Structure formats: C-alpha cells, structure tokens
Length: 209
Image (cartoon, rainbow, N blue to C red):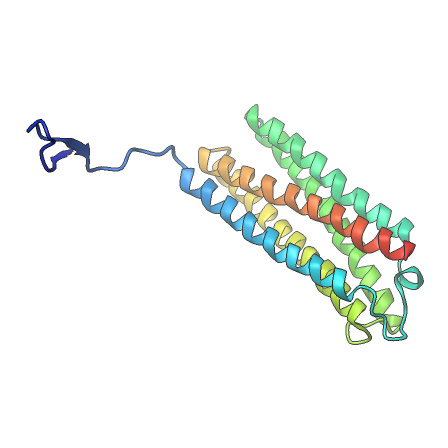
C-alpha cells in the first residue's frame, strides 16, 4: 500500500511504502537470541571482573593451589569441548536431513554435558567437605558464583537439548526445529568460550599465584 505525503518542490506528490518490508521467517527469533547472548556476555563480564577484584582475598583460608585439582579440571574441560564437537556433528547431519543421526549426536552431546556437570558437582562437594564454602572468603564467594553460574547455564542447556530432541522426534527437522537447534548451538558454543575463560583465569592463573 502506498500513501501520498506533502508534494515536493516540483509540485509532484511523493509516495512511500506504509507497510514494513517483509523479513525472512525466524528473523526476529535470531535477532532476539543474539540480544540475549549479548546480555549473557555482560553477566559473565561482571562475574569475571568481580572475581578479578576478590580472587586474591583468602581471609586466611585455603588458596586455589590448596583446592584445585588441575587434572580433574582438565578432564572436565575436555568433556565440554568434546560436547561442542559432537554438537557440530549434529548440525552437519541436520543439514543433511538425517533425523536419526542428528538425534544420536545430540544424545552424545547431552552425555558429555552431564559428565561435565557431574564432575563440577563432585568438585564442589569436595571443597565444601573440606570447609571451603562460599562464606569462607571473598575468593570462594566469587569462585562459587562464577563457576556455579556457568554450571547453571549448562544445566539449562541440557534441559533445552532434551526438549529439542523430543520436538525433533515428534515433528522432524522442520524449519522451526532447525532454527531452535541453531540457537542452542550458539548458546552451547558460547558456554564453551566462557569456560575457556574460567579455566584460564580462575584455575590456571589461580594455581600460579
């Protein structure tokens, strides 16, 4: 639909489109998800900054080198990185419209994610058993908040993953499910990048202090 506005200097009417130009299907979903990821970046940036300020305040309590088992953390890191690789395989098989193989790779991704959460909870339980609770020092408060927030995100990602597997099993690889899987892919890889920062900034540099 076109609408006439004030005539131009030549006396001829000027027209413009009153209706907004069409957007591709799912455009708003992708845009909204990118905005969400940017907000998550801000959350983790604040948590990293907080840890940077408080990470050296042990209050005569245990320090990172007294608590962290880098071998265990390295295994945990490999679980999350492997899950990122297997999710990539799931995306490749999705592009080939292979439902069974996509579901298989998603299931393997979920198992790696569960292993990551299990190891992290084991680490937390051991630290709390040793008396290294969040109330013990500013360092431990910042540590549990940062690492725990990341673990919560991974847990939410696993719930999202299972939900999408059910959706794919029920409706197949329709356009909406492909879009949702792509959004989860961005979320999952984002968590990998954040964990690399946690592994380097919290664990490695913490032990080297």
